[in-house]
Image 1 (tube, rainbow, N blue to C red):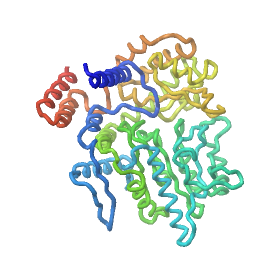
Image 2: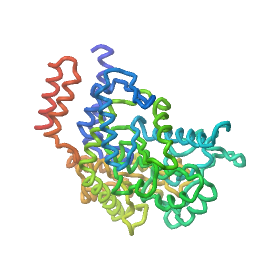
Image 3: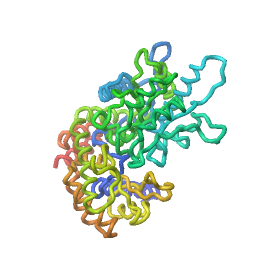
Image 4: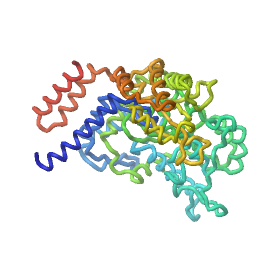
Length: 480
């Protein structure tokens, strides 16, 4: 075997082993991940994956700068239509390739908008103040000055820190906003942008209340909801546009079971005080932040949006039910589950467990991984820093899609308690339990999906005979 063949063999062998381990032997409980369906994956590697389709509106015409992209132009328009239907909104910008980029595109657009509102002749400035969730209280990194908000909010000369005001939290439940203090904070600090949404996310956000307060501000702040974690639960968990939110951002690969991308969704219709922001945002998406916007995953997103619109109701209902069931099972197993037990601990896909008395969060997460239970350690609201994380954060969305119901999380909770409380080795039992959940749900079943995947695969190969052999083998594997 040549050196080239040996290196390629090593990469392929390790990739195949890793895929088999994660897909067939592990319970994947990280709340920011998912496995797309077979057909979505096949779309991601089809021909558009290597292409460009830069475009922007010039003189009321959408101008494309490459040839050979009629198909992908149709795909982008169709995906926008499916997602407008999903959110019940008029505007979707799909070119950001991550949720963090989607947020940064919006921050750039808001900064441009507020400067234009200032009028000509005045020096450019950043946003005067922003309200968000503090990072240590579950706020998303991308909405922090150390994340995408970097360079887009003014600095307080007295403190040397950015003018970012955090949502207040209740003393009796650090995961809920203290709504009694919102009015004073908003009217005192007058933020130009208010950001809802978290990465440690158990409960609904007070969108309607903040919208009523914001309506009294002049100028009125923009209400943004970063739904990255709960995008796939839109409507069943919370419907921000009906409560007064102006824009929604998010990534498309957490509870929304698509490929890894981002989007900005708008409800800025005629007469809205921020109506002109949408044009700023579109121009910041391209040419401001992207050139190639990863057309393979764009095609995959279209198919994922079709799946989501068809299976949404059943999928969302099961995710929410599974999260509550898993949380209750963990509590019965002797683990300290965060949140309020009177409301089932959670309203989203996420479940949080406090492990401080059994070891550092990082150590516990590694111990669980050694037993094929994949989670992530998390700083809880009363931890001093992420370096001393005392929590384990989990999400049920991926295993829900692999067919797990409430009762199926009961044994898993027991395995986790064995590992966390007793430091027991349960890997063999975990692998055996996972064998019951290998077929993906909320998409076409394998017998129907395999011929379609084979057709996509055959088209990728320049030599038709190679493509046909791969396709025939794929159909045999999935229909056996």
